[in-house]
Structure formats: structure tokens, C-alpha cells
Image 1 (cartoon, one colour):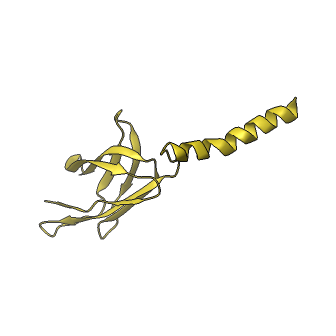
Image 2 (spheres, rainbow, N blue to C red; image 1 turned 90 degrees about the horizontal axis):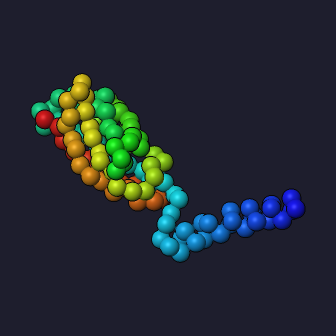
Length: 111
């Protein structure tokens, strides 16, 4: 009995990625990265970047570095609302699409 159950589990483990690929599904995450600049030449470090899913649940978040660059890895593919803020002030709000295995580059400028 144990052997049959192991074989069934192994078969399912192998077939799920194959059927997913045939149906256009992917389990491989994507990456979101970009560069934030300031129209006034001001500081762009520490800008908080959030990805919210369709249920307004947080998928990923990060902060910009001292030069305004950011990166979020291992993001599930899908549609997200991307928000950027600092000190409770929102600077950016846009819908983005993350594709499996790809890097989505979102550069934007704040006032």
C-alpha cells in the first residue's frame, strides 16, 4: 500500500508542472525592479515600494537604496497595484503585470 501511494504522489508531482505548462500556467516567480528619481533633485532613498494583490493583500515590499534603486524577487505572476510612499505620503500608484520568469522594470519620478 505504501508503495502505491508513493507512486501516485510521484506521478502527480511530475505531471502538475507538465499540465500547467500545457495550459499556459507557470509556477516560476518573476522580479520587479526599477529606479526612482526626484523631479526636484531631492533624496530618493527609503521610498517604500508595495505590491498589493486584487484582494488588497501585500504580495511584496521593499525600500529604495541610497540611489533610488529597488528590487523585489520571487514575486508570483499576476496583476498588482504598485504603490510607493514615504512618511505616509503616496507618490506612485499604478497597476502592473508580473510575468513568470521575467523581470518587470518600473521606473518613475516623484515630486
